[in-house]
Image (cartoon, rainbow, N blue to C red; front, side):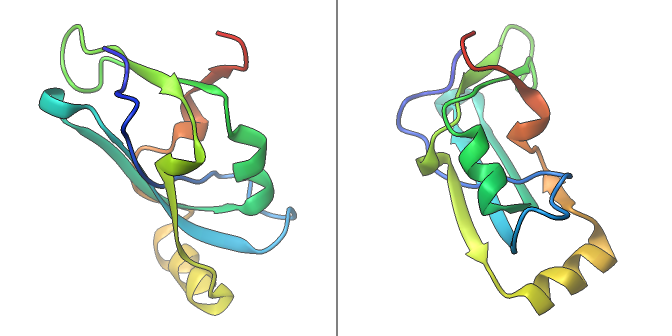
Length: 112
C-alpha cells in the first residue's frame, strides 16, 4: 500500500552537524485504515530541501503486505521549533532521532 496523497507532516536526520541551524520536526503519513507512520527528530533546512521529492520505502511497517512507500513532500513535515538552545538540550538528552520513523533513513533514490 502506498501512502495516500492527502498526508501531512514532519521529519529529520542524523547528519545535521555542519549544515546550518537545526530544526525540530515532525513527520507524518496517514495511511488511513492501515495506520499512521510518524516520527519526531532533528534536522536542518538544507537536509530537508535535499530530500524533497525523494522516494521513501518503509516496507511492511504497518503489517504484512502494507508496503508503505511514496515521495517525500513538504506537506509531510512540520517544523515544531527553531530554538537552538532548546534543540541542543533535546539532542543532548534524547539524541537526534527522538521518536518514531525518520523518512531520510528509508530513502531509496530519486527515480524509483
